[in-house]
Image (cartoon, rainbow, N blue to C red):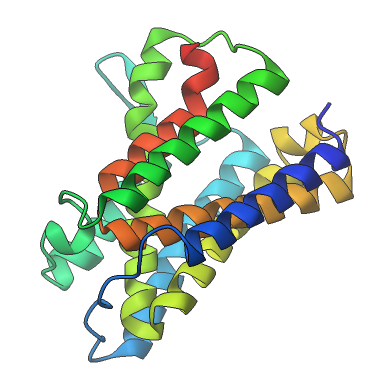
Length: 247
């Protein structure tokens, strides 16, 4: 059982890393060009987030069996998976005509934050291994993990939502509200789903876990912004989630 104390220590420890990344690890690059229509940019960001939030909530409340899915190569992919990948693509690529480099598909512009991001991912993964032990994970899951959740979530939350927020609100508000949206998206699993059960149905543990998830989003958001590359973020996310399985 994951206790309130464990969740609190993890949350406040991650916040310390956020402050370190904000102040000491690399410098912020030139902001993304200000949107000609910030209100529309915000509306699009909130709308696609709400769609994904509703999808997550449905899965948690009613289960994956009643959720539409399709099998590809013997692996089932839910409609949620395609929503997370395709909604940003339609909005950013099809509608706004934004190129790959604008969406983080590029080498890092600064290697210090990029390297630090991967290091933090390994740290969180090793930390989980120390406290929870190795996790029996199938090879299929370890391979698919690069795509979902690692690439899927970095593409949605950092490359899309945070970038849209930066074009509308500026850099500091972008990583703050981007991380907050990342944390809020986990409310269904924290308070109704498997993590709620894992925390012993403790409100305090769930709230501290939520704070930790926001801090995770802030940390990843800052270092993604400073590196301008999705690739270190995806690798770091993968290590944070699957290093215990690899070990």
